Image (cartoon, rainbow, N blue to C red; front, side, top):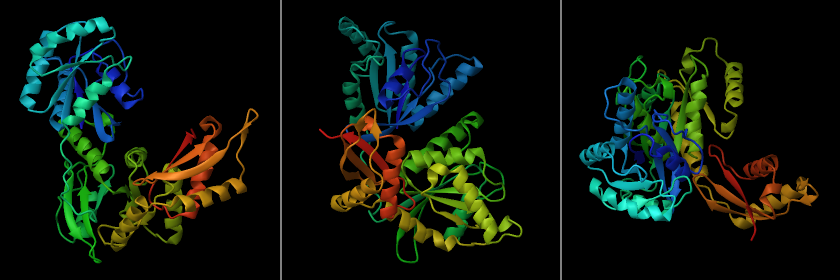
Length: 433
């Protein structure tokens, strides 16, 4: 977890967008545009990390300014590494020194980025920032991308060592959902004991709670109960914001994510928002409909109708299996461990290149490649380059000739040939050198 902090209007959001490679944060010359923390995934030299953009830190008593500062302080507390952004055009300001004092107290690794060094002649001005006492200043231009490599090299040096505290064969899964869908009740029902506080009051769970257990077949699991995820605009307390960050981290650390819905309340817009976190993280997904016992006059037709509704509302999760359970009566909960093992195995599935290309050739024969502006798409071969999620690269003569619909067709043919139930798969088109 890397937090970008600094006083207002030094270019934090521009730097955030440059590192992530997308225009996610709003960028304006007006101080205070970024108010809530914004999260995104980033990668440098094979190291994946979460990046947080924060609002500018001002030591003022104005209500909004105070809230922005509190959000930045939450990000500092949760981060493993902090990037302090300053501005070469203004030199060292009193506000920079105040932010530096705040970072001293955090006792976290701090990397100092001197932004807006667009002209090589300004590099000599960066030495003034040694006065902040935060070590070597790194000159960058977030607008032009200059100096980011050296900055990120220093950032990843401070990443904590990955700890192998569990066996390789242990499956880690998390339960996510909006508040009060019954996640904690499910945890207790699966374990057969009152391990987690359960209440009808939404938001009882504030932390991500890890529990180790062993299945009937000897398979080891780590189950993570997360706090209910709310809309960004509904996050009022700092504790709720901590809870969101920990839920996001739990998703990233999981092999399998159980998206829990409330059968009694039906599907809400927030349910789709929550499920999107797991899908975008590339985790294996199972959709769990809890409180099925509360549905009156339920039968096979009722289950079919609800399944069709889920498939319509969660079209991007067409690969995810659906199970209807009741934490109260333990209905079908015994099916979950085996289902989790199945989708985790599919998440790690690797296909031999020869077999994969046989499927690809059959797909091309059944539906020949399209022609765009008189030029035909040529598909040469494919290979799998990663698992969790399974990722395939298809080499072609010109990636621009492959329309997303044809790419989706090839993805569907791969799914039809191999069992990837429960896991997303990524298909990347690439030009053959």
